[in-house]
Length: 138
Image (cartoon, rainbow, N blue to C red; front, side, top):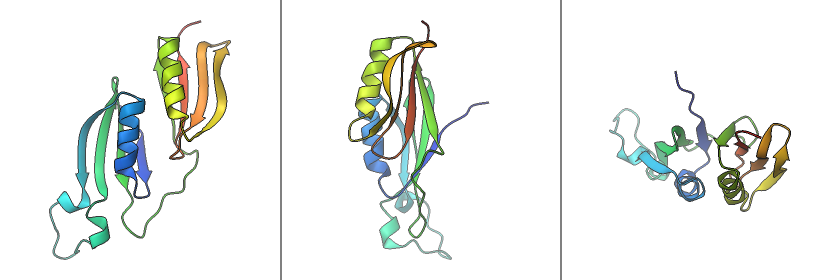
């Protein structure tokens, strides 16, 4: 069994993937637009949907995150319903990830030493996704 966060975006998936690729040193495993999918003549694709991402997946370390843009006419609420915990054994690496994700975002809990971690913080990035950055060990 594997749990994979799936982020539904409002038309900015391509931008988000590039941001996470840089901030998290992620590898893009797959990306397909609605326009690249086989056409169904019974349901013609609106022109504004052709460049939107129908499905994408990135790999961060040993984990994967999936993405999709909403189909035109549908939206997702930006909120805290999806939280992603990123764990590292290296406090400096954890701090670097935290600082990368906080660019144009909002710090919920500053990165700091806690009773359960030598480096922990919570940040909501510029796309409204909340990350818990956790360093293993004390």
